[in-house]
Length: 263
Image 1 (tube, rainbow, N blue to C red):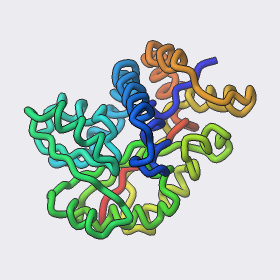
Image 2: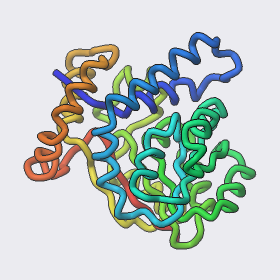
Image 3: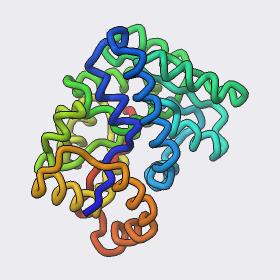
Image 4: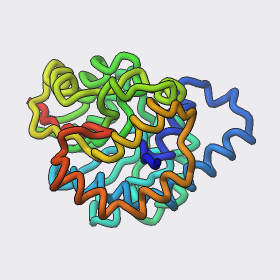
């Protein structure tokens, strides 16, 4: 049984989000970077599928929260976006992005959603779209974080989020990689409205992934997800997309995607 979860990029990055980077050994940092590079190589098809679901809501100036090594930044650039800002709480990742995309004019900034200074800095960038893919579930007080993101946007600006779906799927593996929760369309929408947004769209995403997660982590009680699972799933993505759209019709999903506009 296979299952594709949030990308290895986000898993490894956010596993360390609760740890002071200064106390992580150089060897551990090196292993982490290798994991991110593996994700960059093998999970691009999955990232492109996610992007296809959200790109029609993009404005002109994009900021990504939690960019990691820039796996989505590259997709935004390939699609012709000129104003792209990468952000992360870890400077190591931003140095990597600056080096890789120096010639393409990508801006970088350290962002801490609990910092008023960070929010003010985002506003100065003039972004009209903020994207957060597999980030909010790692933040303990997500309600305040949504409010901070609202303050960072101009009126009419959009926040696009993808988060894990269904608490019924919450497993020891979620806990291991730093998930405080999984969401439903309803409770995510409620939190966004409370933060000052109106909802333009909410959908469940990747129905078969949800079934695979349930079988492997809830029924079989697996402790982790193998690299082979991601590779197999990426090969099968055309079939999975067809099932998701025409048969299961997004009734369930491993993730929730929400598009919210600042009122």
